[in-house]
Length: 241
Image (cartoon, rainbow, N blue to C red):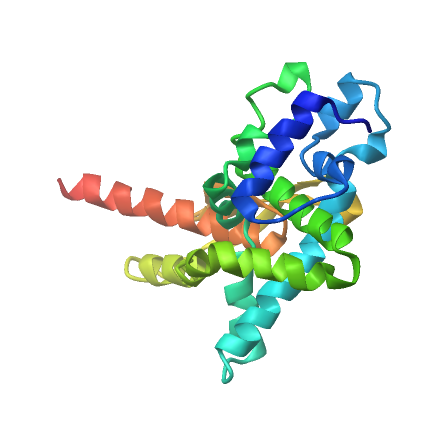
């Protein structure tokens, strides 16, 4: 996929924010290319960001796992896995992406212009794709460079991620009122096998209270639990007014 002179200037401007250098700007451009963009421009469908996202997802999880393993020498597998789930969640990655203005560089199709780039899921995908691009660009030093980028720019953000368990909080809240426990159901799943998106719903007292969307069933349930807790707390407060 060729890159125009104007686009090269944009990508070089982005790279200044990261402190990284890319010889292969076509690779970098691919990390920002949504499927709707390559479709509209009759470009090979494999040149959107999805393959890089697949690679970057693995780089991200290994980087965060290594970080947590060193940070919590006494943490058990369950605790570390739960913290990692919050740190690599779409909402977290979306915040990180916006810190370096990634949304300003995403290429989308005409019909999707402006609609996709603010979505947490899209920003998270592009963030992961960028990590995948770093990994390939720097070859044998790729993982080190990707991890350095992540921790040099976002270490404090990752440490400040709220890693409390919203499902536990929701269960604790509901048990104050009755013995009917929240129940979680996967409402839908979509996307290719390597990049599925799940929608989970949480039911309480026989009613669907809220739903959440994420890249794993567990993360989707967490999102649903967070929203359900907010809804139930607001309902109780309104009744007490």
